[in-house]
Image (cartoon, rainbow, N blue to C red; front, side, top):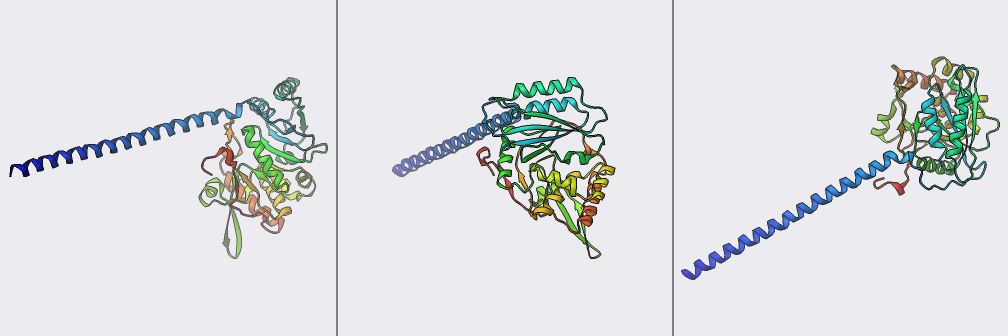
Length: 330
């Protein structure tokens, strides 16, 4: 009896030690997991912090480019000189840039002080002997069609169309330029949009569905020209072959010039645009898209332009170009 009691006590003691050991191991695993989670969170925050400042980073970049083989920036601007200076100062650092063309539609010409400042900041930020040309494309009429006027002396084939209140890191611009060079007839851009279609009384009716529809469905059929690459030939086509009624509609409604350009390119290529993933920094606070009735106006544009073209040329796609060198999850 006494032997069995001693045996039972020893077994209980062994069980307690085993439970304590299992508990200790489990606790160690939990602590290790927590440490890993904390370390990973810190890493993400540090990465996020570097991303937030990377568009102002002036680190080493390959800035070599041959004349005509780089790209030209076509920047639309309107009485936002502080934003314009900030944008020009940034993009002047980017590799591959040949020239900057400012679409100027204000009633007064650019001041001498503004021109001198921009020229000075371009010279300061251009490196390795590059000479980035700055030109003001002066327009007598205030029309959104001006942003797509033909530029006769444009050397570069690639045009990077951008608004003065939008900034992308130089590495994102370079990646988009590389993607464009692989498909130079298509539009390559950072801001995708989707056109939805439904049948009403036997006819197709188109609606401007915006970003959330792209996010939900994973498909799009436009990239907005406020941040996109396209071939310079489309400036000539827009100027000379875009139906006059469409250009008049754009002028009167101060909207939809980007939709008109998307229609034109898709009508020529029968191909979809290419969406490039990139971090966008909007340094302005207002714009046409913030005004009431914006989506309704663009829906009206879609149906009117489709009628003018005799068809809906926009081609849907779900393709997205991602620079996997800078992405963990892509």
